[in-house]
Length: 217
Image 1 (spheres, rainbow, N blue to C red):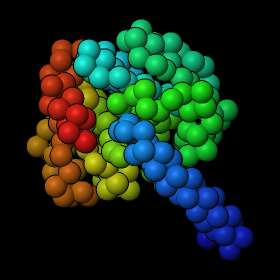
Image 2: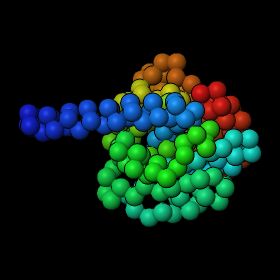
Image 3: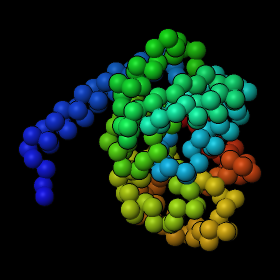
Image 4: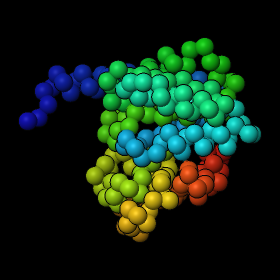
C-alpha cells in the first residue's frame, strides 16, 4: 500500500527542517575549524571499538570529541571517555537515527573551537540514518566482515551517500569465510570510486590509513 499524501508531506517537512538545521550546523563547524565525521553501521559492526581506538590515537596530536547515539544507556559514552576525549551520549528514546536538532542540543556548553575533530557515532541502523544530514563533512559506513559481502546490495542508499567505507573486524575474516573480492565488487556496484579501507581495531590493521584519511578530510 502506498503512503498517504499527508504522510509524505509530513516526512518531507521533517527532512526539509533537518536539512536547514544541518546547513546551519555545518556553517558553525566551519567557523570553529572543527571537522565532523558521521559514523554509520548496523548494530555490532564495531563502530564503538573502532572509534575508541581512533580517539585514543588522534588525541596524541589533535583535540577530539565524540557524540554517541543510542536508543538507551550511556554505556558507549563511558567506554569512549576512557580515551581521554570529550564525549557525550545522545539517548534517542527509541528514535532509530540521529537528527540535526539532537546534535545541536548536545553541543550546548561546548566551545567547538576547542576541537579539531568531532565524531558522531550514529544509532546502529543502515536505513533510517541515511536520510538525515547532521552537518558532517564526511560520512563513513562500517561494514563488518561477519555481516556478509552483499550488505551494499541490500542497503544501497547508505553506501551511495558514503564518503568512505570501512571493512571492520578484519581479524575475523578467515573464520567468517569473508570474500573480499566480492565485497569490493558489491561496494563498487552501488558507489563506484568510493574509497574502501580494511581495518581491525583489535590488531591495528588499516588504522594508519584510516587516520590519514581523517586528517586529510
